Amino acid sequence: MKHSLNELLDIIYRYYPRGVGITDDVDVQLRNATEEHARLVAARIRASKDDRWHVMLRRVEGRFPGMVMNESLHLPSGGCDGCYSFTLDLTETTGRTLRFQVSFLAPYYIIHGSRTVEIVKQLRDVFIVDFRGMHFRVSQSPLDPRFISNPDHESPRAVTIKREYVTFELSPDEEPYANWVAQEIEAIFGCERMPPEVGTALVPEVATGLRIPGEVRVYDCLFSEHEWVKPSPSDVPAPGVSVDVTSLTERLVAVLTVLRAHHQIGILLDLPRMIQQLPEPYRQSFGVYWSVSTDGFLHKDKMLEELARMRPHDESRKTLRAMAAKRELEALVASWDGEGEPPAAMVAWASSFLANWPVDSVADLRADLP
Image 1 (tube, rainbow, N blue to C red):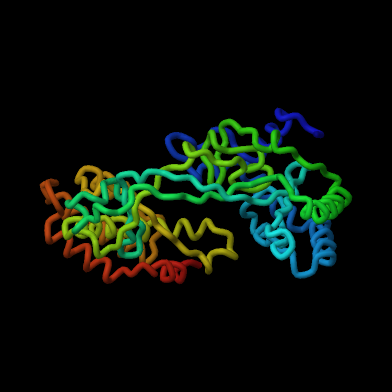
Image 2 (cartoon, rainbow, N blue to C red):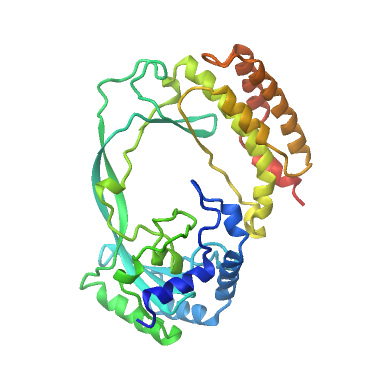
């Protein structure tokens, strides 16, 4: 190894800010506004123009035609990863695909495949339902008749979860392929292979795109984010049950209808800013998938607090209309006594609002952008 672990951490901290925007959650906007993140984006763009990468890729593709997939096409936009990455499809010979990654933040590369582990977990008192284009996670028992009509008490209470993780162990049949590519990488980039005991070391005080502090490893920062260590049962959260929307009680349908309208207003007010922050190549293909957690009840004080925090981020036609809808919902919530299920007038308003603001409003917001 050319560097000690402490030296590698010093390199990582040049590109990943320590402790910035990290409280109970991660403030991605604050983190992305740092000098370190700007340095990381610049490194990605610069790496995309490095002739060595294109030379090596051509050589590997020439040696193994039809078996190579370039996983670094996103680098010119400055998004994702600290490495070049490509896969070699060996499924017809060894049954696996190997991934080769070359860091452009430090002089190291890695070669790995994947394995799958099966973990049996008891289901939690949580159920998941897709409702009006939004993914709701309801922290209640799927056997509770307040939320589920005719609950199935005979349903299994355990499930087998399959998790894929990285393995650096190669079979004898894979070794010749890996060795040939490794020689090319070392000759062209002058780097060396990073051992797992170094790459899987944890990086303090840093968050990445998919990982929170305490979970981030050296590999996540210098290469890309994967499941680098075989997960144990304690590492895998117990899942909830997925239920069909037709199984919901009328009371829960009323609650989710109001919550869906409430979150749609927030989405419409915040999306212009989110889209504007995207690199230009991604704006037209930008898609969204929204997930919300709830206990299955409306909470008046919490809703008023969240509505009060909503502010438009521009003055487009869409955000002005959304602000008017926000005021209407705010008035309905304020006049409600906060007890029991939402009043019929609130549910009727939410249903009408959602009918006039379809989920594909994202496309309309894109049209408003310069």
